[in-house]
Amino acid sequence: MHNQIDPKEFGISGKTVIELVSRNHYAIVISRKSRIIMSDGRKLLNKFNLIKKAKPDSKLSLKTTTPVCGKTRAFLKDYHIDII
Image (cartoon, rainbow, N blue to C red; front, top):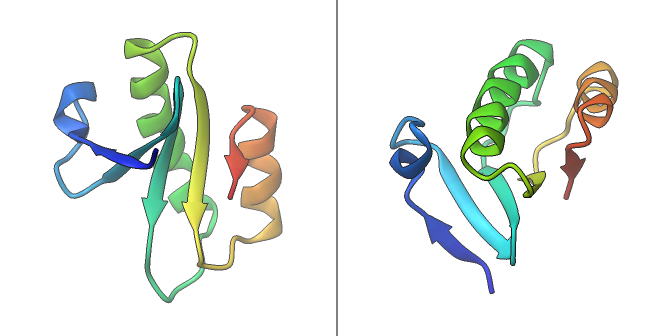
């Protein structure tokens, strides 16, 4: 399926890439070279919360080819956000 969704639909900056992975499964896509650290994780959580507020029954994921630090990985897992 993998359709891009307009982030403004959720009140998120237009630079953010959001994909509809499957029915009620949304993923924020990050494509960069530098690793995702805790400060990035907190910013992502704010974006995920905006999506969750608009679509309460949705499943959320982070889709990236970038390395994610262990602390951030655990932090996102605590909020039931999968890393693809």
